[in-house]
Length: 299
Image 1 (cartoon, rainbow, N blue to C red):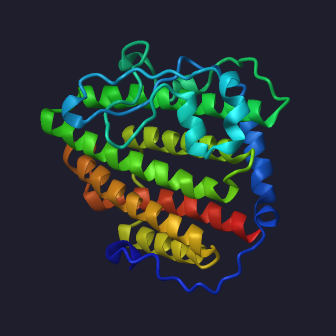
Image 2 (image 1 turned 60 degrees about the vertical axis):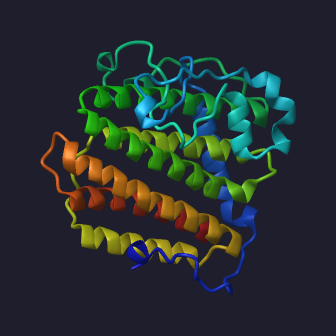
Image 3 (image 1 turned 90 degrees about the horizontal axis):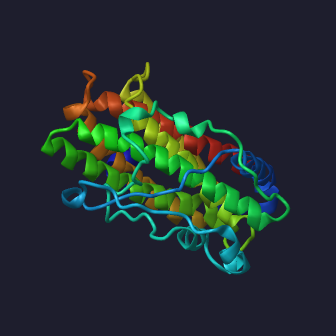
């Protein structure tokens, strides 16, 4: 299996590299609609993540800069550079505990409550403005992740906090690599920052839900892993070489994240949970993500 041996980059190079715009036009439309929807969400002062586990008693505050000051240079930068320009300091895998400081106690907020907020005015007349709205929407999701993370961390023992921090480092690395995979087909285009921001937001919401320890799936790990492997191999089979390499890096990072997160849950979760049950749940979620990529590629 690809998941145990981690030999993911050996696919044949003879697959057709379809025209990006023909393959992904429906996805572009969907992402543009997500960008429009993102503009209806109120944005708190966004703050982002991560400190070394041993240094993470408080997360460092992070705020977004205004979009107008960076709009002139956006199209010449990679999506990640655009996001980093919008933030005073970017989230990196070196600082796992630094997701943003909340405006109040984490226990004061119900799960995902701040993802449903009154609308805020947003300029939709240019692609740059839509991109900025998507970045703000991601920052809001990141702020909610911080609240959930801090609440969970505060309930842990010292060893639990260390295990949680290790899992968070692994997730951050996976997040960055997976969003690089999602957006690299649009590098240099005006929509690249939108694709990247939407990816960050979606993965951040999934991570928030993971920390809230959702119900376990009605499926065994063996079955879930088999389905994930099948979907992964199918997607690898239709990607050009460069994107296959990027996906391989993201998938290896996901494996590390899965292992670290499930090790934490097995030892410190409030639920009675075996490590393979957590792995089954995470594998089912990852398979759904890759299946969506495969379906878009086949259009």
